[in-house]
Image 1 (cartoon, helix red, strand yellow):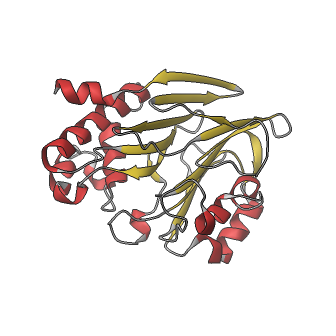
Image 2 (cartoon, helix red, strand yellow):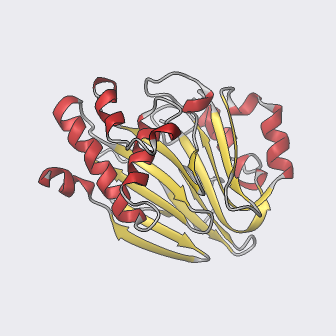
Image 3 (cartoon, one colour):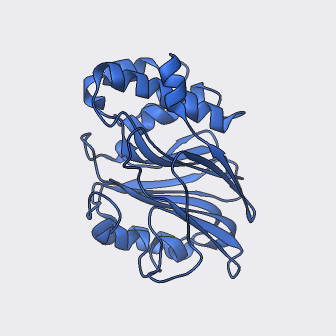
Length: 264
């Protein structure tokens, strides 16, 4: 599975999360310890917010540890909110369009996990994306489909409800035509001001997710794996959670799309 990291708070250089820590995201790309795959070499991406409403996006298909452009970008760019992702494909091609994060207007999204048996109902999943949003469908991943379905379900005004409803629609398809697990995910979303994160699985093997507030940086990191060994202060996000990170505050809500899928 993929690994990802996000940050919200006072502006910092991207490298302080992406490449500098002892167990940074780049280190996790070739030495993950809490994922099903230790190597995540099927591309990487970064989305960051600056003075404009829409984010900057940089994605490529190289392994994160071998791209000098990534090292230079993270050393020079500062941001108050950014996301970074290293990809381990669950079946779709290694291409720039399949790399996370994905973007729509001012929103960004990245995902670690899978929709069970997605290859058997890709066409049906695409049909859940309204025509007005389909031009944003650039790749072939279940992750991008989930994001655009979430947009169609009211992401701008109801992030939690939209994410639950979109997840339920894909769980329903997986039950009908796919395979176990129907859905596993940790995901991050942002509108450029707030950072949202989800941890959920339809089985008992929920991907890992942690967060930590830094009084030094005056910001919060939200990550697949802690960025430093033996560093105190990391809190594990409970399974079946939807979290809102704004300032130094954390709000946690229950996340149960399976209930909606059962009622469908």
